Length: 485
Ligand code: SF4
Ligand code: FE
Image (cartoon, rainbow, N blue to C red; front, side):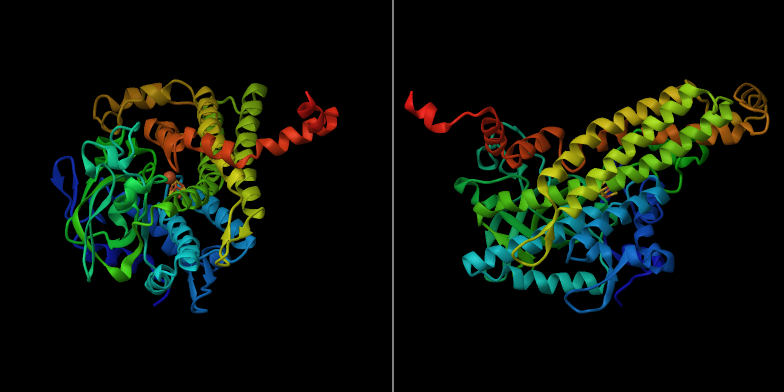
């Protein structure tokens, strides 16, 4: 079975013996619990649409390993066309869900580990890539959802992993034997982790010799012994028990992040893809981060499409859709959205093959995309708030609307134009609130790495010396003359 249906995905998650807690209580079934269900629904779309002939070209592809039809989320990019299709697929999925469907992190991890293990084997004569190929085939054939697990809790950010007072603040190897390794630590902000089948652990930063034990890349089932997930609290949590107040009740906001604790987890050798080769950690981080930053113009582009639609609808319900300043602000939202998207398409089109044959994005442009997202999404949200009006912040609840005595006042005083019922105006307002609220914006800022991480990579990739030489040449500055002095 190479393509799971949405039902098969749900059933396969139900079968896992996941150790997930939220609000101090154990979640028995992430598929059914109100806090996690919307995220399962969003991830489910990556399975459902793979069976829809309208999206076959975006959602499915031929495996370069087996020649079989697979879900694109398990594919290794074979061309710039594949990279572009990834961005288009993400925009389409975001348009349909208005939120995060979480599967891209594992997709990017698979691609990063693929090319890096190839280069490691070439140089070190190890067998990591061969092991990884077997694992990849297993992932493709079972259409698995992988959580890309990079970010460590990090403790004191001024100290290296091995210098931390508590050694567990970065995931590390605590034992190595003939059967495999044992790892300990935690991974933080894990998007989609609680409804994934597997996690692919990677180091979070470039490492030095003293940090050898922290150089680990391996695959673990999300329900392996010793694994515990603590689900993050979102700004709208208590609303998940009602419908109307949520805004996007079916798919929720952002990805449903968790803290994943790894308490002496055993990993057999066939699932270990880096073990103490600290010199390679930086390259893996850079590949993964660039692939993930490529996504954001597609993913947030699609989310912004929905927000623009919601904002324009709100303007219509408020009776101001024709006002010139409203039209101008909507155009500005569109301009910013397409700017984000253009960057994702550009870094994909400028992609190049790695030594493994797998294609990699242009890392400079990919980092620019994500840096733009950290700014433009706030501006898009600001314009939406400007147009939608103050009720985004002051709306009474669904219970008040349905209350036998209060309901009539809400009906009467929250009404906009005559042809639209109050409940629909409230629905669109809640959607805007949901999409522009705290959790959603913070994800745009810090998801795929905080802005400073992109600035570091932008500076590193930009080749400033080359730009200086361009200028010196035009200005007629000769290096020899400077040396003569
Ligand atoms: Fe994919 Fe990340 Fe966007 Fe979620 S936030 S849809 S994981 S790119
Ligand atoms: Fe993200």
